[in-house]
Image (cartoon, rainbow, N blue to C red; front, side, top):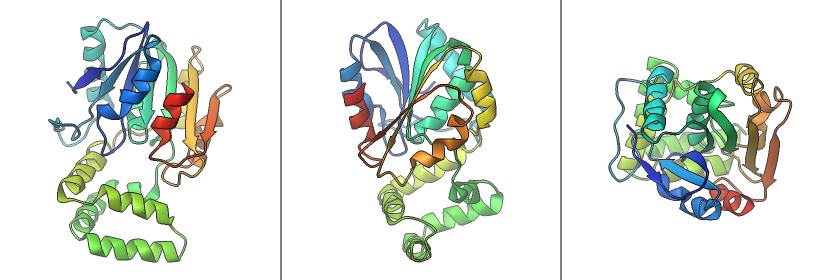
Length: 252
């Protein structure tokens, strides 16, 4: 069972999933803003938090994840609920929505990972050779920086993306966490048209929030899903990636 923390009280349970390098505490301001309307249950994902939970097996499958969330819902006697995910947590929000779509009233996705998969992520996690190279570069950060500068010079990546990556990889502990997370979560993949078919079966309020200056998960990354949805709400905030949860808290 993943560590979960109840941060507020309200009539509708809200399951919240944080981004890479974060913990449940990132949702405390959001929970304060939602007090009285939502019971916010914020999870510490695998390899994150004060007492990180390690993965079970080589990779997290949707079947194993379904069992985890099913056990949580049973334990807390939750029938209907809402889901929120930020950045990497978007993968967990999408997986929850896919597996329990008939029980979900709201889906809130804040710059969500998992809709458009970065080619760098595919390269780093998709094959055994890619995973070996990924580990090698994480153990040779100066080399990774030089490659990053080259990719910036030819327009393959944005400077803010490299800065985000280097902040995430600043220490050996962070590099281990990033490697474990990317590798362990790689099976949480989605087919946008299939998701849209599920979401269209029952009325689910779907809200997207992105940052106008966000180059990590830009608004364009949502296109494969929103093009298949008949109704959704999209709010683009004048901010970058890091301050999105704070800005969304004020909006909600």
